[in-house]
Amino acid sequence: AQKVTQAQTEISVVEKEDVTLDCVYETRDTTYYLFWYKQPPSGELVFLIRRNSFDEQNEISGRYSWNFQKSTSSFNFTITASQVVDSAVYFCALSEAGYQKVTFGTGTKLQVIP
Amino acid sequence: GAVVSQHPSWVICKSGTSVKIECRSLDFQATTMFWYRQFPKQSLMLMATSNEGSKATYEQGVEKDKFLINHASLTLSTLTVTSAHPEDSSFYICSARDLTVISYNEQFFGPGTRLTVL
Image (cartoon, rainbow over the protein chains, first blue to last red):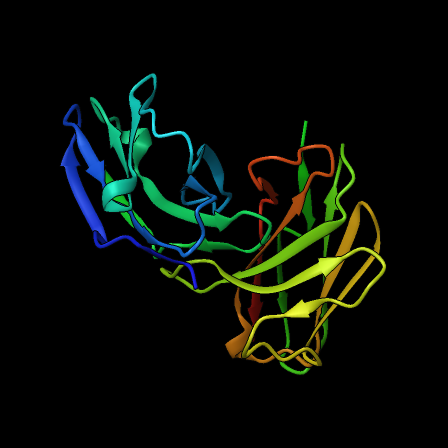
């Protein structure tokens, strides 16, 4: 069975601070996919990134960066120089290859204080 | 591309009535659509997987007679909440899988429908 754990329920940071959102996953498959989504107060899920299990390269996109480490089954997400617009709930998710079900973590609510 | 819409975006109904929610893939064909439910301050929980032309597969604990799913075409799936009760109040989100994107298991999510049952 697949499982995603986001231990941080809520995080508050002051604007311009860096913040890292943790994600730990469990799966028995060797091929799987990891995702991060942002859910602002409006409710609509915003896709941020996907990563397959064979690609351990870290990725940077603007102020966002992701650290994928298979050795620790972690896929952490860092926002650099946070902004108020980053305030949202962030979900980490896992999908096993050949199996369409996506399992979401419990989410981390990020509040960026001006 | 890969846009998924939902209608309505919100609905308020009286207890005992039925509510239908539509999920459409606007610019791609989706053999598979998924229905999720999200209670306030909680995560998304998969309710069922809907395959075009066949019966939906429900997750454990989801009442199939209460949550009727129909996937009659490659671009439309509907979720009907029958005899809705206040405990069914939730945010319902659908997602669709693009046939042409065979890698990454990516699903495209709709904007969600907020259901409030009085």
